[in-house]
Length: 269
Ligand code: HEM
Image 1 (tube, helix red, strand yellow):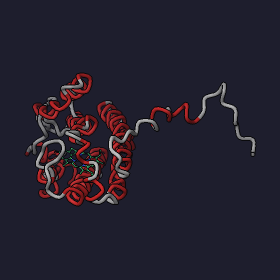
Image 2 (cartoon, protein in one colour):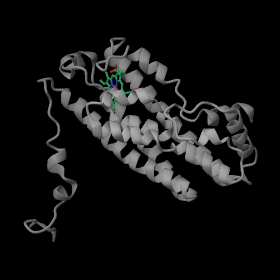
Image 3 (spheres, helix red, strand yellow):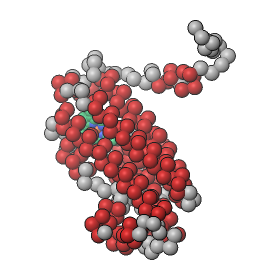
C-alpha cells in the first residue's frame, strides 16, 4: 500500500466522522420483498437531502433578512440543485414495477410521505402554509412544535418582500405578517415586482432574488410532477397509504403556487 493511514485505534476514521454505523444500520425492511430496500433507501436519501435543504433555506432567509443578498443567492442556487438531485432520483425508483410494489405495500400500513415532517417544514419555510398539516405530527410533540414555531416566523418569501419594502417599494404591511395560510396573489405586490422586472438594471438585486425564487419553484414543481407520475405508474388510482385519494390528491398539489405574485407578474409585463 501507499502511505495511507491504516490504524484508527486512536484517530477518528471516515466511518466515525459520518456516523455510518447509525446510517447504514437504519434500513430495516419489514417484509421479505427484495424491492423494499430500494423503497427505504430512496425515502431515506430524500430525507437527507431535505435536511440539507432546510439548513440552506434557513440560512438564506437569515441572509436576506440581514440584507446579504449575494450570500442568499448562492444558498438558493444550492437548494435548486438539491431539488434537481431529488428529481433525478425518481429514475431509480421508476425501475420498481406495480408487481414489485404490491409485494410489500400492505406492510407499510398507514405510513406515507404525506407524514414527512421535513417536507412540510420546507413548504412552511417557503410560504405554502396550512396548520392542518401539523396534525399528522401530533404523536411527535417535538416535530409538531417545530412546525408550529415555523408558522410563527415570516416565510422566506415574506423576508424577500420585507427587503423590497426596505429598498423603498410599497408593500402592504399585512402581507409581511407571519401567517398559517399559503401566500395569495396580491395586486400591490404584483405591481411591486412589475416595477422590478420593468427595470432590472436599476433593481438588479431584487430582480435576481425574484429569479432565484422562481428557479426554486420551477424545480419544486418538477419534483411534484415526477412524484405523481411515478405514483400513477406504480399504483394507478388506488388510495394512498396516507389516506388521501392518491393520484387525484397529488394532481391537485400540482396547481399549488409557492410564489403566486412572481408567476402573475409574467402576464402583466
Ligand atoms: C412507490 C413510491 C411512492 C408511492 C406509491 C407514493 C405515493 C404517495 C401518495 C399516494 C401520496 C398521497 C398521500 C397518501 O394518501 O399517501 C404521497 C404523498 C407524498 N409522498 Fe409519496 N409515494 C412514493 C414515493 C415517495 C418518495 C420516494 C418520497 C420522498 C420523500 C415521497 C414523498 C411524499 C410526500 C412528501 C408526500 C406529501 C405530498 C403533499 O402533501 O403535497 N413519496 N405519496
